Image 1 (cartoon, one colour):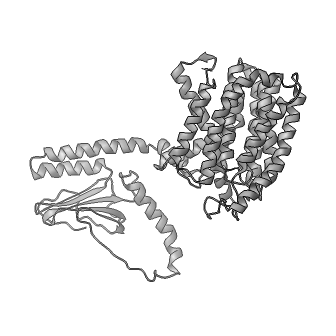
Image 2: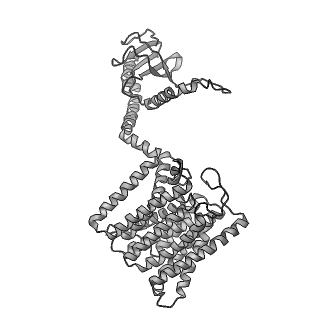
Length: 509
């Protein structure tokens, strides 16, 4: 049986080698090309994105060859033919969804609808996650888990398909890993399903590696991810351990990680989840100065490392399985840290620096301020409340003109000789105002202090360098005061006459 698997895999490899340039040249003549845009599409010339056509045809033709072999050679295929027949419509839906996107361009929701339809057909064919960690899961949970897994795998290879040879190479590593693990555990059907696809991808890489003359396109990347997802689910059903899910998960770690990072980044920024950006793993590596080829080879190396961990996980006992999972997570964490995503660094600073707590306390204080002012019965009580409230928000001093009377207070902890303040001025009707002060030398930060401090430090560092270039030319400088609130972040000198409250006497700063 093993000989038959390698025979049809060699056939799929050779057929892909022949079909790919024929399909490529046909679409070149038709002018149906993927054109560079200088932003996300970084290739130099227009390239056909129809690799999925030759891969799909060669993959299916390899099984037709197996069916023509003597009955003994094709016995495994004949035994599993009902499952394969049921799965073909699902694969066809995914392939056609990708092909329509390649040729006509689909909206994100249309692509998702096609993937959901393919996933539904696959689940009706019996592709379902039935248990986790040795425990059977209820039917609705199984459907939800299976849908998330298949759609996640399908999109993982689509999202990482951004450089020549990247998605096809990652798919090749994942499929070979699954094939080796299938041989180790005697799963002939899974071996039969995976190796011909590996032959197709190997033949396609001949034309897809940098510089590529043809791209996978969505018809290829979506199909590869979907089939790998199905392989993992079927494997888990036929295995007594978690191997069926663990090996594909680790083997596909790079595409799945890139997808998870993309979703998390866009959610943190409030951007559309299905939108496009230049924040994928390969983009971050390009920003570090690596060439296209080196980025692809580096990610191949990462895929190889994850493949080794996957296979080790499949042959070790439960005693050491946890160690491999910890090592897998550690390698992943170190890799993400070196990519330098600003979103996750910012979240870490927010969580570790107490910004969430300060924001919560600030919202509570704002509510208390609103109700407190409404509860004041006279101007004296209102002034005392404003004094107290300004300190709670981290301000060093407050000056006010209320109903014609002037008031001033400066925190006793502030040095009177300190001349560096930033100021927040709030104009009120009839010439009244509130004037809040904060000393740059004070350690405590007001609610808006992080932005003010950043602007001050940044300008202090850069303004000397700008002095030699002179003032900007051709620019109209406009200074305006809003009708409600005017915020001044300029450093001004403020010398209070006294720390005591002054009522009825104007004190200028």
